[in-house]
Image 1 (cartoon, helix red, strand yellow):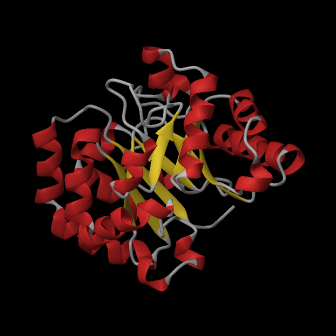
Image 2 (cartoon, one colour; image 1 turned 120 degrees about the vertical axis):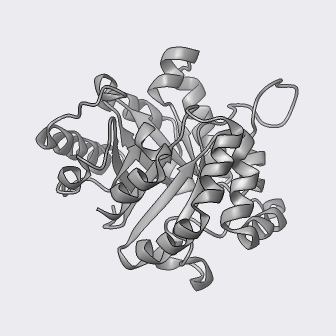
Length: 272
């Protein structure tokens, strides 16, 4: 666990390619200024645009980091992760705005038409990737097996998986199938009650806190080898409710949906 706070901006498919690029370009100066504020407040912002925008987003935000990630990908090593903020190379501790993907393939390179491989995400400098999101499970019938396979591929590529769950059993199923002792992964567990996604409603703080505590208890009693994990909440997060959510001591961050495509709204959330 950590006191560092994470803000994951999931842009979903709300914007077109040109709209996403415009959002980056029009707010690039403010985004870079935001980096300094985030560093002083022990916060990290992760932006998850669509696949088609990832390369341009990486180039706009941190061209030198993109170049380095492409050079080092042959060694299957990315030098910048959340843990680097405290333990890694000092030259990377200032990078407080990072890139994430909304999904990845459960297959490696091969004849898989329309899929986006983890290797490609790594070469683009992605630090994080969402897996098991409720919308993927509901609309595209993704199974636990697919989610677990994706997580394993991400961990091998040293990309932090953001594992979306709505119930404790989903987490148990995932962790039961990971070799935690050997891989020593860094993971983010995103609690998303399905009824709260896109509804404008959020659970009471006590309910979120109880779920977080249940996750911690499960990990401490059944998966004690998992040391580097974060618990975040997702579901109708806005500038209006972020202050209340920040009061939950068991929480390490939030997963932001539609509110994140309005830059000023996103900024208010992150700086609250």
